[in-house]
Length: 115
Image 1 (cartoon, rainbow, N blue to C red):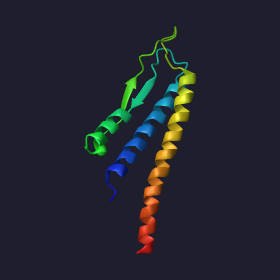
Image 2: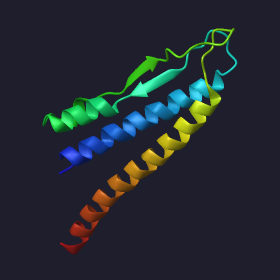
Image 3: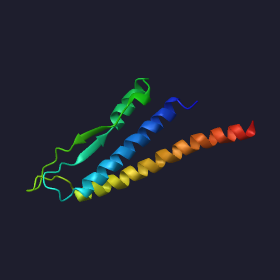
Image 4: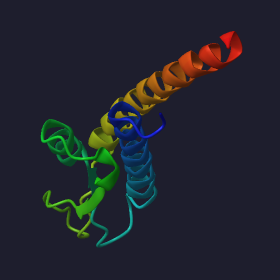
């Protein structure tokens, strides 16, 4: 019941989005740190591939990669505009995933109450 494909996919998505929020926060916190390279979190393609191929999404873990974007003179490559947009997008996706998970559990709560 709790390990169905959609629940597993939502858990992986929430975990990946939370990791991305952490990376964004670290990137912004280090915007003036010389030599700091921005971090990017990827998981969507692996999650989609697992679901499409009928594999369990539970095995998908987020990958934290170092950005290859060009650097400024101090060796830092954090782009505040890009990080801000990524933060907004990630927050919206995270909230949507949480609402979807809450909807699944709400149905379960209602079924238990009605029994």
